[in-house]
Length: 161
Image (cartoon, rainbow, N blue to C red; front, side):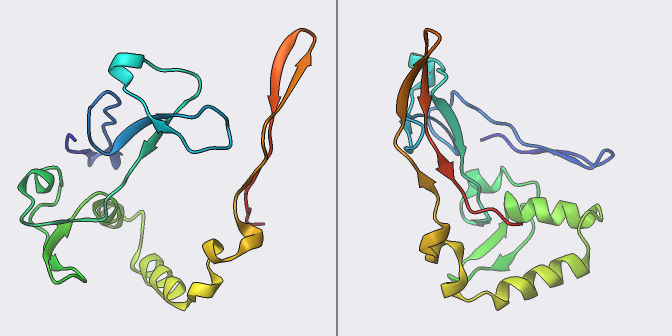
């Protein structure tokens, strides 16, 4: 994966997304029906279809000994010891937060309040642990209207009000 590009003047982070790479953090997947998670697609061989979607994984930090991955960071000289006892550097999400802080998009107060808020959340109070707040997908129903084939399905998400 190529290194992100920083535009210090405009305070922008550009993240390259390589859709045709054979491995990496970007995956093109295909789903046969809207309410299922898809299977990987070989884009170079099969091309793109309307039923495809893109999935991107994001890292939080990188172990200093992983030279290839460390070379992708804009902050390879940063250093801290992770929960697993390994020396690490900022990478992806943590480096984005670093740059936003440096550009004053985020403040000390924002970060302190976020940590305080997250520390107060108990495991039994997470969305994942609340059955009534799970994402609910109905099975599709086929319907023909004016000679056109349609597929009706419902997807219910929890929404903050």
